[in-house]
Image (cartoon, rainbow, N blue to C red):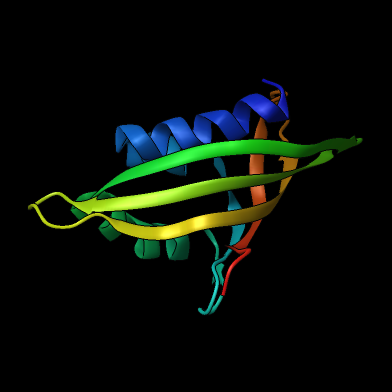
Length: 127
């Protein structure tokens, strides 16, 4: 699967609320670097940080644009812009989590030819 497709699947799995499919995109050693928070190092830490979000919120991830896709042997990266909204599953007001976000994601090719996320750093273009 090309890197662009992995990135698009990332968003689709957020929107579908399919946590297990979403977490399967990550390598065991993955590092997630959210804004204003410590890095989540390893799949267990990512699972611990993100599962409650998927359990309690309906996510609305919109991939606004893919600015770069580069491959360097067994490593690849994407740089994109996106928006992210979330609505509580129990009802309530939509939260604009990231109305103007950007992300730089590093992937590593696996022995089966698939790509897994090894680093994901994201933040907002607005303060």
